[in-house]
Image (cartoon, rainbow, N blue to C red):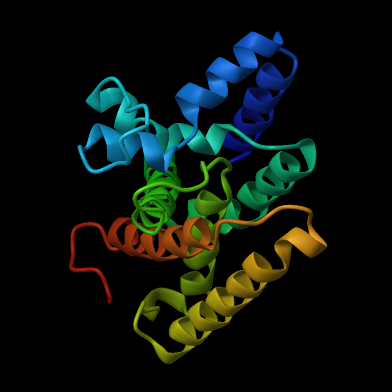
Length: 213
């Protein structure tokens, strides 16, 4: 998890210290842009510029996590990855092995889940999505399940209560974000990442037997 946090910070440093033209190219290629995706799918507005290929359309579902709008955002997400990722990583141990690929898969599924919900709620156009907060939200969901022990379930009363509180806080921050933070957060990325991360974590934690739902 430390390596992932360093990668997030390094990716941000690479972009902000690159020439202005390169920064624009990185944002254009790496951010998830709903208007371009829906235009590529043949469902967007007539004046939207579509992605040029399936790879260009779907890769931003993950690469958007490598882009951030400031040092504060990337440092916060990197810190959450370390703090929340540590217990998730050790809970995914299989025997004496701790498969890093399983941890990365949970994080990637969380990022993709947040991207998908953001995309679906931004039809046919909307704000571009960047940031690893969807991945951090998924790790938080895994941490919540860990607190319930090996019998933790996604449909347990405790988990659903935490999810509802988490969703309410994110919706409040979405409404108040421009006034408090100077920007509007993507509640979709956080909630989608939370749900996708919970499902992926349970699937990997109970690998080889049916996951507890």
